[in-house]
Amino acid sequence: MAEVKLAAETRTEFGKGAARRIRRDSKVPAVVYGHGVDPVHITLPGHELQLALRTPNVLLSLEIDGKTQLAIPKAVQRDAIKGFLDHVDLLLVKRGEKVNVEVFVHTEGDLAPGAYLLEHVLSTLTVEAEATHIPESVTVSIEGLEAGASILAKDIPLPKGTTLAIDEDAVVLQVLAAQAEEAPAEAEAEATEA
Image (tube, rainbow, N blue to C red; front, side, top):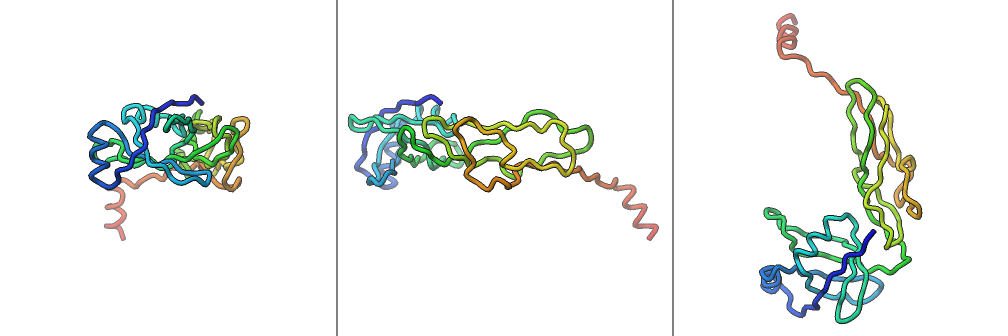
């Protein structure tokens, strides 16, 4: 995983008015915390941060007051209508440190022929990985699965150095048989016969 470098400015103004002024300047208010240090309120460049957050679990290299610190996004708040970034919470990490993150579960292959549905019980998987080697996603094959088949967390292949941080017997995917609906004409005919 590549690091994304961002120049951060510490901020001393707080509240809605200050946050609006920051956003008007195409920047995003953020807070950095972790490792037992006091939270640091910062301002990040909006466009660069928006691009960086397109990568799940991106590792950010922040230049704050002449010091470089590594952080990962913990909570991202967006405008409900326009989708712009409103605020970001960042968690400080160190090289070699293990962190718990959620990674997306992708599927490959096709189910067995027939009327089957794939249910994503969990769309993400909580894993523990080194902060500088966080996987973007995990992929599992569903090739040839039929109704009643389930894929558990322990069945999903994880990248080297990554371990499960949830119950290994948790159901992630399951295959269901599609239920056919009765045609309206047939339902009416049965109702009149009764």
